[in-house]
Length: 591
Image (cartoon, rainbow, N blue to C red; front, side):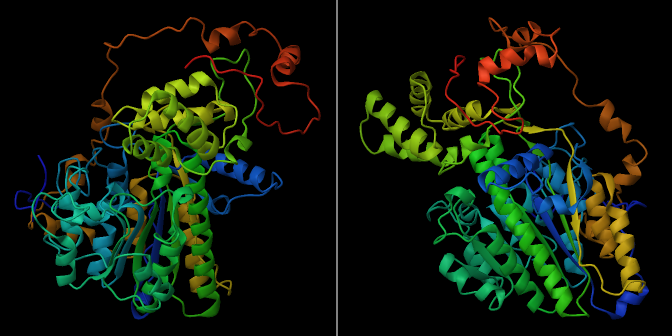
Protein backbone atom coordinates (compact mmCIF):
# COMPACT_ATOMS: atom_id res chain seq x y z
CA UNK A 1 0.00 0.00 0.00
CA UNK A 2 1.31 3.46 -0.87
CA UNK A 3 0.54 6.56 1.14
CA UNK A 4 -0.78 9.18 -1.27
CA UNK A 5 -2.29 12.64 -1.28
CA UNK A 6 -3.35 14.24 1.97
CA UNK A 7 -3.19 11.07 4.08
CA UNK A 8 -6.95 10.79 4.42
CA UNK A 9 -6.44 7.13 5.20
CA UNK A 10 -3.96 7.89 7.95
CA UNK A 11 -5.22 9.02 11.29
CA UNK A 12 -2.84 8.91 14.14
CA UNK A 13 -0.71 10.97 16.44
CA UNK A 14 2.90 9.88 16.79
CA UNK A 15 4.73 11.51 19.68
CA UNK A 16 8.43 11.78 19.00
CA UNK A 17 10.13 10.95 22.28
CA UNK A 18 13.10 13.18 22.95
CA UNK A 19 15.73 11.11 24.70
CA UNK A 20 17.39 12.31 27.85
CA UNK A 21 20.70 12.18 26.00
CA UNK A 22 19.51 14.68 23.41
CA UNK A 23 20.76 18.25 23.25
CA UNK A 24 19.88 20.59 26.10
CA UNK A 25 16.99 22.98 25.48
CA UNK A 26 17.87 26.53 24.62
CA UNK A 27 16.18 27.91 27.70
CA UNK A 28 13.75 30.77 28.25
CA UNK A 29 16.46 33.42 28.00
CA UNK A 30 16.87 32.62 24.31
CA UNK A 31 13.32 33.58 23.47
CA UNK A 32 14.33 37.23 23.15
CA UNK A 33 17.33 36.46 20.96
CA UNK A 34 17.76 35.06 17.50
CA UNK A 35 17.04 31.36 17.36
CA UNK A 36 19.93 28.97 16.65
CA UNK A 37 20.60 27.34 13.30
CA UNK A 38 21.32 23.75 12.27
CA UNK A 39 23.43 22.67 9.30
CA UNK A 40 23.06 18.93 8.81
CA UNK A 41 25.53 17.37 6.40
CA UNK A 42 25.01 13.80 5.17
CA UNK A 43 27.69 11.79 3.36
CA UNK A 44 25.57 9.02 1.89
CA UNK A 45 27.29 5.61 1.97
CA UNK A 46 30.45 6.90 3.70
CA UNK A 47 31.81 4.39 6.19
CA UNK A 48 34.94 4.28 8.38
CA UNK A 49 36.97 2.47 5.70
CA UNK A 50 36.05 5.16 3.19
CA UNK A 51 37.54 7.83 5.43
CA UNK A 52 40.81 5.91 5.73
CA UNK A 53 40.71 5.25 1.98
CA UNK A 54 40.36 8.97 1.21
CA UNK A 55 43.03 10.01 3.69
CA UNK A 56 45.59 7.56 2.29
CA UNK A 57 44.72 8.51 -1.28
CA UNK A 58 45.13 12.21 -0.48
CA UNK A 59 48.49 11.64 1.17
CA UNK A 60 49.73 9.59 -1.79
CA UNK A 61 48.37 11.83 -4.53
CA UNK A 62 49.72 15.01 -2.92
CA UNK A 63 52.91 13.39 -1.58
CA UNK A 64 52.00 14.36 1.98
CA UNK A 65 53.10 12.94 5.31
CA UNK A 66 51.08 10.28 7.09
CA UNK A 67 50.08 12.82 9.74
CA UNK A 68 48.07 14.90 7.26
CA UNK A 69 44.36 14.50 7.98
CA UNK A 70 41.05 15.19 6.27
CA UNK A 71 38.64 17.97 7.30
CA UNK A 72 36.26 15.36 8.71
CA UNK A 73 39.01 13.81 10.83
CA UNK A 74 39.20 16.98 12.87
CA UNK A 75 35.47 16.93 13.65
CA UNK A 76 35.08 13.30 14.77
CA UNK A 77 33.19 12.97 18.07
CA UNK A 78 31.60 9.52 17.97
CA UNK A 79 29.66 6.99 15.95
CA UNK A 80 26.09 6.35 14.85
CA UNK A 81 24.43 2.93 14.80
CA UNK A 82 22.35 2.44 11.69
CA UNK A 83 19.97 -0.57 11.78
CA UNK A 84 16.34 -0.12 10.76
CA UNK A 85 13.30 -1.75 12.38
CA UNK A 86 13.21 -4.63 9.91
CA UNK A 87 16.89 -5.21 9.11
CA UNK A 88 20.36 -4.99 10.61
CA UNK A 89 21.35 -3.34 7.32
CA UNK A 90 19.44 -0.12 6.70
CA UNK A 91 18.64 1.66 3.48
CA UNK A 92 18.75 5.43 3.02
CA UNK A 93 15.00 5.86 3.48
CA UNK A 94 14.79 4.30 6.94
CA UNK A 95 18.04 5.93 8.03
CA UNK A 96 17.07 9.41 6.85
CA UNK A 97 13.67 8.98 8.52
CA UNK A 98 15.53 8.29 11.78
CA UNK A 99 17.46 11.53 11.27
CA UNK A 100 14.42 13.56 10.26
CA UNK A 101 11.73 12.17 12.60
CA UNK A 102 13.79 10.81 15.47
CA UNK A 103 12.38 7.29 15.14
CA UNK A 104 13.34 4.11 13.35
CA UNK A 105 11.34 2.80 10.44
CA UNK A 106 11.23 0.12 7.76
CA UNK A 107 13.60 0.05 4.80
CA UNK A 108 12.07 1.99 1.88
CA UNK A 109 9.72 4.04 4.11
CA UNK A 110 9.94 7.80 3.64
CA UNK A 111 8.91 9.98 6.61
CA UNK A 112 6.57 7.32 8.00
CA UNK A 113 6.99 4.95 10.94
CA UNK A 114 6.85 1.16 10.94
CA UNK A 115 3.04 1.35 11.18
CA UNK A 116 2.99 3.47 7.99
CA UNK A 117 1.89 6.57 9.89
CA UNK A 118 3.52 9.86 8.82
CA UNK A 119 5.86 11.43 11.35
CA UNK A 120 6.69 15.11 11.70
CA UNK A 121 10.22 15.91 10.56
CA UNK A 122 12.71 18.39 11.99
CA UNK A 123 12.44 20.37 8.74
CA UNK A 124 8.66 20.63 9.10
CA UNK A 125 9.00 21.44 12.79
CA UNK A 126 11.49 24.19 12.02
CA UNK A 127 9.22 25.63 9.35
CA UNK A 128 6.32 25.72 11.80
CA UNK A 129 8.52 27.76 14.12
CA UNK A 130 9.29 30.36 11.47
CA UNK A 131 12.56 28.96 10.17
CA UNK A 132 13.66 29.00 6.56
CA UNK A 133 14.46 25.49 5.37
CA UNK A 134 16.64 24.00 2.66
CA UNK A 135 17.52 20.69 1.04
CA UNK A 136 20.63 20.51 -1.16
CA UNK A 137 21.87 17.27 -2.72
CA UNK A 138 23.81 15.82 -5.64
CA UNK A 139 21.17 13.11 -6.11
CA UNK A 140 17.67 13.55 -7.41
CA UNK A 141 15.95 15.87 -4.96
CA UNK A 142 13.23 13.21 -4.78
CA UNK A 143 15.71 10.53 -3.71
CA UNK A 144 15.43 8.84 -0.33
CA UNK A 145 17.49 11.16 1.87
CA UNK A 146 16.02 14.57 0.94
CA UNK A 147 12.59 12.97 0.52
CA UNK A 148 12.59 11.77 4.13
CA UNK A 149 12.69 15.37 5.36
CA UNK A 150 10.01 16.67 3.00
CA UNK A 151 7.54 13.90 2.15
CA UNK A 152 5.63 11.01 3.71
CA UNK A 153 5.08 7.76 1.82
CA UNK A 154 5.85 4.08 2.34
CA UNK A 155 7.60 3.63 -1.01
CA UNK A 156 10.86 5.44 -1.75
CA UNK A 157 10.43 4.71 -5.46
CA UNK A 158 7.24 6.78 -5.66
CA UNK A 159 9.31 9.80 -6.64
CA UNK A 160 6.58 11.46 -8.69
CA UNK A 161 4.43 11.66 -5.56
CA UNK A 162 7.42 12.77 -3.48
CA UNK A 163 8.05 15.63 -5.93
CA UNK A 164 4.44 16.71 -5.61
CA UNK A 165 4.67 16.85 -1.83
CA UNK A 166 7.99 18.68 -1.94
CA UNK A 167 6.51 21.66 -3.76
CA UNK A 168 3.71 21.81 -1.19
CA UNK A 169 0.94 19.53 -2.45
CA UNK A 170 0.09 17.89 0.88
CA UNK A 171 -1.64 18.74 4.13
CA UNK A 172 1.14 20.99 5.51
CA UNK A 173 1.58 22.97 2.30
CA UNK A 174 4.98 24.17 1.14
CA UNK A 175 7.64 23.47 3.75
CA UNK A 176 10.94 23.78 1.88
CA UNK A 177 12.40 27.14 0.83
CA UNK A 178 15.37 25.77 -1.12
CA UNK A 179 15.12 22.57 -3.18
CA UNK A 180 18.36 22.03 -5.11
CA UNK A 181 19.65 18.89 -6.80
CA UNK A 182 18.79 16.68 -9.75
CA UNK A 183 15.58 14.87 -10.64
CA UNK A 184 13.93 17.11 -13.25
CA UNK A 185 12.32 14.05 -14.83
CA UNK A 186 9.98 13.64 -11.85
CA UNK A 187 8.70 17.20 -12.20
CA UNK A 188 7.70 17.06 -15.87
CA UNK A 189 5.08 15.05 -17.81
CA UNK A 190 6.31 12.32 -20.14
CA UNK A 191 5.25 14.49 -23.07
CA UNK A 192 8.00 16.98 -22.20
CA UNK A 193 11.63 15.84 -22.21
CA UNK A 194 13.09 14.59 -19.93
CA UNK A 195 9.85 14.07 -18.02
CA UNK A 196 8.57 10.63 -17.04
CA UNK A 197 5.40 11.57 -15.14
CA UNK A 198 2.31 9.75 -16.39
CA UNK A 199 -0.25 12.11 -14.80
CA UNK A 200 0.34 15.03 -17.22
CA UNK A 201 1.32 17.35 -14.36
CA UNK A 202 4.09 19.89 -14.88
CA UNK A 203 5.38 20.48 -11.37
CA UNK A 204 7.87 23.11 -12.51
CA UNK A 205 4.96 25.27 -13.64
CA UNK A 206 3.01 24.40 -10.50
CA UNK A 207 6.03 25.38 -8.40
CA UNK A 208 6.15 28.75 -10.17
CA UNK A 209 2.49 29.26 -9.34
CA UNK A 210 3.29 28.49 -5.72
CA UNK A 211 5.92 31.22 -5.70
CA UNK A 212 9.11 29.27 -6.43
CA UNK A 213 11.91 31.03 -8.27
CA UNK A 214 13.18 28.51 -10.83
CA UNK A 215 16.88 27.96 -11.52
CA UNK A 216 17.16 26.19 -14.86
CA UNK A 217 20.91 25.96 -15.44
CA UNK A 218 24.40 26.99 -14.40
CA UNK A 219 23.91 30.50 -15.77
CA UNK A 220 20.86 31.01 -13.55
CA UNK A 221 22.84 29.65 -10.60
CA UNK A 222 25.74 32.04 -11.20
CA UNK A 223 23.24 34.90 -11.33
CA UNK A 224 22.52 34.22 -7.65
CA UNK A 225 25.85 35.93 -6.91
CA UNK A 226 26.96 33.37 -4.33
CA UNK A 227 23.60 33.71 -2.58
CA UNK A 228 23.44 37.49 -2.37
CA UNK A 229 20.74 37.61 -5.06
CA UNK A 230 18.89 34.47 -3.93
CA UNK A 231 15.13 34.81 -3.58
CA UNK A 232 13.06 32.30 -1.65
CA UNK A 233 11.54 29.87 -2.31
CA UNK A 234 13.98 28.47 -4.85
CA UNK A 235 13.83 25.33 -7.00
CA UNK A 236 16.90 24.17 -8.95
CA UNK A 237 16.94 20.89 -10.88
CA UNK A 238 20.31 20.65 -12.60
CA UNK A 239 19.92 17.19 -14.15
CA UNK A 240 17.24 14.83 -15.37
CA UNK A 241 18.33 12.21 -12.84
CA UNK A 242 21.26 12.46 -10.44
CA UNK A 243 23.87 15.16 -10.81
CA UNK A 244 27.26 14.04 -12.13
CA UNK A 245 30.00 12.43 -10.09
CA UNK A 246 32.59 15.03 -9.21
CA UNK A 247 35.21 13.47 -11.50
CA UNK A 248 32.72 13.60 -14.41
CA UNK A 249 31.16 16.99 -13.61
CA UNK A 250 31.09 19.63 -16.35
CA UNK A 251 31.59 22.82 -14.36
CA UNK A 252 29.92 24.87 -17.09
CA UNK A 253 26.69 22.92 -16.58
CA UNK A 254 26.54 21.95 -12.91
CA UNK A 255 27.76 23.67 -9.75
CA UNK A 256 29.83 21.71 -7.26
CA UNK A 257 28.49 20.53 -3.92
CA UNK A 258 30.58 23.20 -2.19
CA UNK A 259 29.24 25.94 -4.46
CA UNK A 260 25.65 24.90 -3.83
CA UNK A 261 26.23 24.68 -0.07
CA UNK A 262 27.84 28.10 0.29
CA UNK A 263 25.35 29.79 -2.03
CA UNK A 264 22.42 28.33 -0.09
CA UNK A 265 23.96 29.25 3.27
CA UNK A 266 24.67 32.82 2.21
CA UNK A 267 21.15 33.15 0.87
CA UNK A 268 19.64 31.80 4.08
CA UNK A 269 21.79 33.99 6.32
CA UNK A 270 20.89 37.07 4.29
CA UNK A 271 17.21 36.52 5.10
CA UNK A 272 18.00 37.39 8.73
CA UNK A 273 15.84 34.49 9.90
CA UNK A 274 16.86 31.22 11.58
CA UNK A 275 17.34 28.28 9.26
CA UNK A 276 17.61 24.51 9.02
CA UNK A 277 19.48 23.06 6.06
CA UNK A 278 20.35 19.51 5.04
CA UNK A 279 23.21 19.15 2.53
CA UNK A 280 23.91 15.71 1.08
CA UNK A 281 26.91 14.33 -0.77
CA UNK A 282 24.80 11.60 -2.33
CA UNK A 283 27.00 10.12 -5.01
CA UNK A 284 29.58 8.75 -2.57
CA UNK A 285 27.00 6.02 -2.09
CA UNK A 286 26.25 5.48 -5.76
CA UNK A 287 29.91 4.89 -6.60
CA UNK A 288 30.15 2.38 -3.76
CA UNK A 289 27.11 0.54 -5.15
CA UNK A 290 29.17 0.17 -8.33
CA UNK A 291 32.24 -0.82 -6.28
CA UNK A 292 33.88 2.07 -8.12
CA UNK A 293 36.84 3.46 -6.16
CA UNK A 294 37.30 6.27 -8.70
CA UNK A 295 33.88 7.87 -8.38
CA UNK A 296 33.93 7.08 -4.65
CA UNK A 297 37.20 8.84 -3.87
CA UNK A 298 36.52 12.00 -5.85
CA UNK A 299 33.07 12.50 -4.34
CA UNK A 300 34.52 11.93 -0.87
CA UNK A 301 37.14 14.59 -1.54
CA UNK A 302 34.45 16.96 -2.87
CA UNK A 303 32.39 16.34 0.27
CA UNK A 304 35.40 17.11 2.47
CA UNK A 305 36.01 20.31 0.52
CA UNK A 306 32.42 21.28 1.23
CA UNK A 307 32.75 20.40 4.92
CA UNK A 308 35.84 22.57 5.30
CA UNK A 309 34.16 25.44 3.47
CA UNK A 310 31.09 25.22 5.72
CA UNK A 311 33.21 25.10 8.88
CA UNK A 312 35.21 28.12 7.72
CA UNK A 313 31.96 29.93 6.85
CA UNK A 314 30.50 29.31 10.31
CA UNK A 315 33.70 30.38 12.06
CA UNK A 316 34.14 33.51 9.94
CA UNK A 317 30.58 34.66 10.63
CA UNK A 318 30.99 34.07 14.36
CA UNK A 319 34.30 35.93 14.43
CA UNK A 320 32.92 38.92 12.53
CA UNK A 321 29.67 39.24 14.45
CA UNK A 322 29.56 38.88 18.26
CA UNK A 323 25.77 38.53 18.05
CA UNK A 324 25.84 35.74 15.46
CA UNK A 325 23.21 33.11 16.33
CA UNK A 326 24.54 29.83 17.63
CA UNK A 327 24.99 27.54 14.62
CA UNK A 328 25.80 23.85 14.89
CA UNK A 329 27.11 21.60 12.14
CA UNK A 330 26.51 17.85 12.11
CA UNK A 331 28.06 15.53 9.56
CA UNK A 332 27.04 11.89 9.45
CA UNK A 333 26.52 9.13 6.90
CA UNK A 334 23.20 7.36 6.70
CA UNK A 335 24.99 4.01 6.35
CA UNK A 336 28.09 2.42 4.89
CA UNK A 337 27.92 1.16 1.31
CA UNK A 338 29.90 -1.56 -0.45
CA UNK A 339 31.70 -3.11 2.51
CA UNK A 340 34.98 -1.52 1.41
CA UNK A 341 38.18 -3.33 2.37
CA UNK A 342 41.64 -1.77 2.19
CA UNK A 343 43.97 -4.71 1.61
CA UNK A 344 42.24 -7.41 -0.44
CA UNK A 345 43.71 -10.90 -0.57
CA UNK A 346 42.96 -11.82 -4.14
CA UNK A 347 42.26 -15.36 -5.33
CA UNK A 348 45.55 -15.31 -7.21
CA UNK A 349 47.62 -14.33 -4.15
CA UNK A 350 49.62 -17.11 -2.52
CA UNK A 351 49.83 -15.14 0.70
CA UNK A 352 48.11 -12.20 2.33
CA UNK A 353 49.65 -8.85 1.48
CA UNK A 354 49.75 -6.09 4.06
CA UNK A 355 48.99 -3.10 1.89
CA UNK A 356 47.04 -1.55 -0.97
CA UNK A 357 48.03 0.66 -3.91
CA UNK A 358 46.57 4.18 -4.09
CA UNK A 359 48.70 4.89 -7.17
CA UNK A 360 46.44 2.65 -9.27
CA UNK A 361 43.72 5.31 -9.04
CA UNK A 362 45.82 8.37 -9.75
CA UNK A 363 45.51 8.42 -13.56
CA UNK A 364 41.78 7.73 -13.82
CA UNK A 365 39.74 10.40 -15.60
CA UNK A 366 36.15 9.19 -15.18
CA UNK A 367 33.86 7.07 -13.03
CA UNK A 368 33.07 3.57 -14.25
CA UNK A 369 29.39 4.51 -14.55
CA UNK A 370 30.27 7.35 -16.92
CA UNK A 371 32.55 5.08 -18.97
CA UNK A 372 29.84 2.42 -19.21
CA UNK A 373 27.35 5.00 -20.45
CA UNK A 374 29.85 6.29 -23.01
CA UNK A 375 30.43 2.74 -24.22
CA UNK A 376 26.70 2.22 -24.69
CA UNK A 377 26.47 5.42 -26.75
CA UNK A 378 29.44 4.35 -28.87
CA UNK A 379 27.89 0.93 -29.54
CA UNK A 380 24.53 2.47 -30.45
CA UNK A 381 26.07 4.94 -32.91
CA UNK A 382 26.95 2.28 -35.52
CA UNK A 383 27.21 -1.45 -36.18
CA UNK A 384 30.27 -2.47 -34.17
CA UNK A 385 32.22 -5.70 -34.44
CA UNK A 386 33.59 -7.41 -31.35
CA UNK A 387 37.12 -6.53 -32.47
CA UNK A 388 36.18 -2.86 -32.75
CA UNK A 389 34.50 -2.96 -29.35
CA UNK A 390 37.54 -4.69 -27.86
CA UNK A 391 39.84 -1.97 -29.18
CA UNK A 392 37.52 0.79 -27.96
CA UNK A 393 37.32 -0.68 -24.45
CA UNK A 394 41.06 -1.32 -24.23
CA UNK A 395 42.13 2.11 -25.48
CA UNK A 396 39.33 4.54 -24.64
CA UNK A 397 37.76 3.00 -21.56
CA UNK A 398 40.51 1.14 -19.71
CA UNK A 399 43.67 2.94 -20.76
CA UNK A 400 42.36 6.52 -20.97
CA UNK A 401 39.33 6.37 -18.67
CA UNK A 402 40.58 4.08 -15.90
CA UNK A 403 44.25 4.91 -16.35
CA UNK A 404 45.17 1.20 -16.46
CA UNK A 405 47.95 0.41 -18.94
CA UNK A 406 48.45 -3.33 -18.33
CA UNK A 407 44.94 -4.68 -18.88
CA UNK A 408 44.85 -8.37 -19.78
CA UNK A 409 43.31 -9.67 -22.98
CA UNK A 410 40.85 -11.88 -21.11
CA UNK A 411 39.77 -8.92 -18.95
CA UNK A 412 38.89 -7.02 -22.11
CA UNK A 413 37.10 -10.06 -23.55
CA UNK A 414 34.89 -10.24 -20.46
CA UNK A 415 34.24 -6.50 -20.74
CA UNK A 416 33.16 -6.94 -24.38
CA UNK A 417 30.64 -9.60 -23.36
CA UNK A 418 29.16 -7.44 -20.61
CA UNK A 419 29.16 -4.19 -22.59
CA UNK A 420 26.65 -5.67 -25.04
CA UNK A 421 24.07 -6.29 -22.31
CA UNK A 422 21.13 -3.91 -22.07
CA UNK A 423 21.71 -3.64 -18.31
CA UNK A 424 24.89 -1.60 -17.85
CA UNK A 425 25.44 -2.50 -14.19
CA UNK A 426 27.43 -5.76 -14.73
CA UNK A 427 29.74 -3.96 -17.17
CA UNK A 428 30.09 -1.01 -14.79
CA UNK A 429 31.03 -3.26 -11.86
CA UNK A 430 33.43 -5.24 -14.06
CA UNK A 431 35.25 -2.05 -15.02
CA UNK A 432 35.50 -1.27 -11.32
CA UNK A 433 37.01 -4.70 -10.69
CA UNK A 434 39.83 -4.00 -13.16
CA UNK A 435 40.92 -1.16 -10.88
CA UNK A 436 40.16 -2.87 -7.57
CA UNK A 437 42.13 -6.02 -8.41
CA UNK A 438 45.29 -4.02 -9.07
CA UNK A 439 44.84 -1.72 -6.07
CA UNK A 440 44.07 -4.58 -3.63
CA UNK A 441 40.72 -2.99 -2.82
CA UNK A 442 37.89 -5.31 -1.83
CA UNK A 443 34.13 -4.88 -1.65
CA UNK A 444 31.87 -7.32 0.14
CA UNK A 445 28.65 -6.21 -1.58
CA UNK A 446 27.11 -3.90 -4.14
CA UNK A 447 24.58 -2.99 -1.44
CA UNK A 448 24.93 -1.54 2.03
CA UNK A 449 26.61 -3.00 5.09
CA UNK A 450 25.59 -2.88 8.74
CA UNK A 451 28.61 -1.15 10.29
CA UNK A 452 28.34 1.99 12.38
CA UNK A 453 29.34 5.29 10.79
CA UNK A 454 31.26 8.28 12.07
CA UNK A 455 29.63 11.24 13.81
CA UNK A 456 31.19 14.65 13.22
CA UNK A 457 30.31 17.93 14.92
CA UNK A 458 31.36 21.57 14.85
CA UNK A 459 30.31 24.96 16.12
CA UNK A 460 32.31 28.13 16.55
CA UNK A 461 33.92 28.30 19.98
CA UNK A 462 32.84 31.41 21.91
CA UNK A 463 35.66 33.81 22.71
CA UNK A 464 34.68 34.56 26.30
CA UNK A 465 35.20 31.67 28.69
CA UNK A 466 32.74 31.29 31.54
CA UNK A 467 29.85 33.14 29.89
CA UNK A 468 26.40 31.50 29.57
CA UNK A 469 27.05 31.15 25.84
CA UNK A 470 30.33 29.36 26.50
CA UNK A 471 28.69 27.03 29.02
CA UNK A 472 25.99 26.11 26.50
CA UNK A 473 28.73 25.42 23.98
CA UNK A 474 30.51 23.10 26.42
CA UNK A 475 27.26 21.35 27.28
CA UNK A 476 26.45 20.72 23.63
CA UNK A 477 29.97 19.47 22.89
CA UNK A 478 29.73 17.00 25.76
CA UNK A 479 26.30 15.80 24.68
CA UNK A 480 27.40 14.69 21.20
CA UNK A 481 30.38 12.56 22.23
CA UNK A 482 29.89 8.80 22.13
CA UNK A 483 27.99 6.05 20.35
CA UNK A 484 24.38 6.86 19.45
CA UNK A 485 21.42 5.32 17.68
CA UNK A 486 20.57 7.11 14.45
CA UNK A 487 17.30 8.28 16.03
CA UNK A 488 19.39 10.36 18.43
CA UNK A 489 20.24 12.80 15.61
CA UNK A 490 16.60 13.75 15.07
CA UNK A 491 15.97 13.88 18.81
CA UNK A 492 18.98 16.13 19.40
CA UNK A 493 18.02 18.59 16.68
CA UNK A 494 14.39 18.71 17.79
CA UNK A 495 15.44 19.41 21.36
CA UNK A 496 18.08 21.99 20.40
CA UNK A 497 15.65 23.95 18.22
CA UNK A 498 12.74 23.35 20.62
CA UNK A 499 10.56 21.88 17.89
CA UNK A 500 7.05 20.59 18.48
CA UNK A 501 7.14 17.50 16.28
CA UNK A 502 4.14 16.02 18.09
CA UNK A 503 1.82 18.73 16.77
CA UNK A 504 3.20 18.30 13.25
CA UNK A 505 2.59 14.56 13.47
CA UNK A 506 -0.93 15.14 14.76
CA UNK A 507 -1.73 17.37 11.79
CA UNK A 508 -0.32 14.80 9.37
CA UNK A 509 -2.54 12.15 10.96
CA UNK A 510 -5.73 14.22 10.98
CA UNK A 511 -5.69 14.83 14.73
CA UNK A 512 -5.46 11.21 15.84
CA UNK A 513 -3.93 10.44 19.24
CA UNK A 514 -1.95 7.50 17.89
CA UNK A 515 1.59 7.29 19.31
CA UNK A 516 4.25 4.98 17.90
CA UNK A 517 6.26 5.20 21.12
CA UNK A 518 3.20 4.38 23.23
CA UNK A 519 2.68 1.26 21.15
CA UNK A 520 6.27 0.15 20.78
CA UNK A 521 8.53 2.14 23.11
CA UNK A 522 8.75 -0.63 25.73
CA UNK A 523 8.73 -3.46 23.18
CA UNK A 524 11.72 -2.64 21.00
CA UNK A 525 12.94 -6.22 21.36
CA UNK A 526 10.07 -7.14 19.02
CA UNK A 527 11.97 -5.61 16.12
CA UNK A 528 14.98 -7.80 16.88
CA UNK A 529 12.96 -10.96 17.49
CA UNK A 530 11.17 -10.58 14.16
CA UNK A 531 14.27 -10.03 12.03
CA UNK A 532 14.58 -12.47 9.15
CA UNK A 533 16.60 -15.57 10.07
CA UNK A 534 18.97 -17.61 7.98
CA UNK A 535 17.33 -20.09 5.66
CA UNK A 536 18.82 -22.44 3.10
CA UNK A 537 18.04 -22.81 -0.55
CA UNK A 538 21.12 -21.38 -2.25
CA UNK A 539 23.96 -23.78 -2.98
CA UNK A 540 27.47 -22.60 -2.23
CA UNK A 541 29.90 -22.86 -5.14
CA UNK A 542 33.26 -24.18 -3.93
CA UNK A 543 36.25 -22.90 -5.98
CA UNK A 544 38.98 -25.33 -7.01
CA UNK A 545 41.45 -23.70 -4.62
CA UNK A 546 40.41 -20.86 -2.38
CA UNK A 547 42.52 -18.07 -1.00
CA UNK A 548 41.95 -19.43 2.49
CA UNK A 549 43.43 -22.80 1.45
CA UNK A 550 46.49 -21.02 0.14
CA UNK A 551 46.76 -19.14 3.41
CA UNK A 552 46.41 -22.39 5.37
CA UNK A 553 49.55 -23.71 3.68
CA UNK A 554 51.46 -21.17 5.74
CA UNK A 555 49.21 -20.97 8.79
CA UNK A 556 51.89 -22.27 11.15
CA UNK A 557 54.59 -19.98 9.86
CA UNK A 558 55.57 -16.75 11.53
CA UNK A 559 55.69 -13.45 9.67
CA UNK A 560 59.49 -13.72 9.50
CA UNK A 561 59.32 -17.20 8.02
CA UNK A 562 56.86 -15.89 5.44
CA UNK A 563 59.18 -13.05 4.46
CA UNK A 564 60.95 -14.97 1.63
CA UNK A 565 57.58 -15.86 0.14
CA UNK A 566 56.38 -12.26 0.47
CA UNK A 567 59.50 -10.98 -1.27
CA UNK A 568 59.13 -13.56 -4.06
CA UNK A 569 55.63 -12.26 -4.73
CA UNK A 570 56.15 -8.55 -4.16
CA UNK A 571 59.83 -8.04 -4.94
CA UNK A 572 62.76 -7.01 -2.74
CA UNK A 573 62.17 -4.72 0.23
CA UNK A 574 64.18 -1.61 -0.61
CA UNK A 575 63.54 0.24 2.63
CA UNK A 576 61.68 -0.32 5.86
CA UNK A 577 59.33 2.61 5.20
CA UNK A 578 58.93 2.14 1.45
CA UNK A 579 55.36 2.43 0.20
CA UNK A 580 55.05 -0.08 -2.60
CA UNK A 581 53.37 0.81 -5.89
CA UNK A 582 51.39 -1.35 -8.25
CA UNK A 583 53.53 -3.62 -10.39
CA UNK A 584 52.62 -5.97 -13.21
CA UNK A 585 54.24 -9.25 -12.13
CA UNK A 586 50.94 -10.74 -10.94
CA UNK A 587 48.38 -12.07 -13.39
CA UNK A 588 44.64 -12.11 -12.83
CA UNK A 589 43.28 -15.63 -13.14
CA UNK A 590 39.75 -15.91 -11.79
CA UNK A 591 37.56 -13.89 -14.15
